[in-house]
Length: 107
Image (cartoon, rainbow, N blue to C red):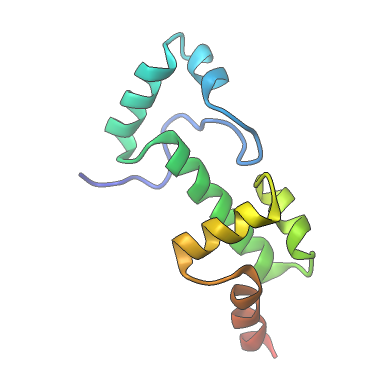
């Protein structure tokens, strides 16, 4: 199954929590919304949302000098530890190592 990068209906901003409000807007149950989302996109809404947050964190780490804890908040993670875990899971590096990679290219 091919995975799309952007779903036809965006759940909510990456910084928001939960999928129930979007399911309610679509006049469907959370279970049906999740099933349809997975069929259309190829991953669960939670996985998609985490990937969006990781992408936002990466952009901020590359382009800003915000402290890591502020990057975590701006990207929608509940904590710095959560962002570290997800960056390591998705990319295999810590936020500091990711930032250093891009800072090394600029200098």
